[in-house]
Amino acid sequence: MEIYNNHKRLYIAALLLFLALTLYAALIPAYKAQNDNAPLPNSKPLSEQEALGKAVFVKEGCVACHTQQVRNVEMDKFWGERPSVASDYARNKRPDIWRNTANLMGSERTGPDLTNIGKRQPGKEWHLIHLFQPRSVVAQSIMPAYPWLFEIKERAAAADVTVQVPEEYRKNIKGDIVATEDALNLVAYLQSLKQVSLPDGRPVPKFLYPKQSTPDLKGMGTQTEDAGLDGASLYAANCQACHQQNGEGLPGAFPALKGSSIVTDADPKALITVIMKGYNGRVKEGFAEMPPIGVNNNLKPEEITAIINHERTSWGNNASKVTVDEVKAVLAEIGK
Image (cartoon, rainbow, N blue to C red):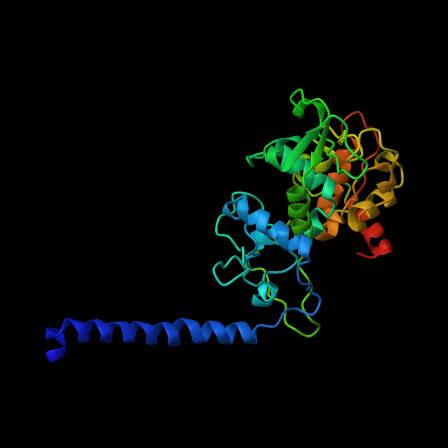
């Protein structure tokens, strides 16, 4: 063919073929998918502060370790109430024509998935402490600290947001640790990451490959134990980040469970209610609002029982253990 002997014609033909394939295989499908993908009714666009926080998230490279996608496998059930769907990302828009940072789904889960972090950790206090020194709230964390997002002032102003970091992590810092605008914007973005419910009538994707459930103990009388679950491990996974391994919490941020009258009360109803519905009764004292851990983390009655029994018998607490049946009765009463 003559075209193979004419490099100009060959080049033009290859270029036209490439452009046609790009148009029909990439651009048109992407445009149609974008127009057909409506945001979920209960979702909200990012506020100006949250959008600025997203830019900080990108700038600091957080997407390298944190995903924002709940896969449809059982092991991801901890990160969200359901698997992610395309409509979860419909409100994400590229900031300008040159950059495409709309979706920060990520590909590495070196750190926890952040799809629902706004519900798992709604208070800004925890996030600020975590950013300044992650190991002050999660001892095993491998996340780097971000001290440049904070200022050290001899005395904070009334309008400043201070961070209550434990003494052992202040490293001889004299003065107040104050969050910068970048830190507050980043936290606002993290607080905005909340998984919303699908519209009524729309099929909810299921988590696949579930773990084998705990054997049913029917016929063995009242369940006085917590199905052999490790309360210390469950506490570490669900509660320790705020209340600490020693149960002493963080002064001015998270209350202590050691010696707590709610934890050691003979009637466990108040403690179970706090776990399932959260608690904001001590916000005026400077403590962060507690999220509904039991609901957010899909805790089963047996897991709640194991956590409660660990708290009631650790750090010098000497309250009687509760049973799975007692926990189930309270859950039925307060309404999960």
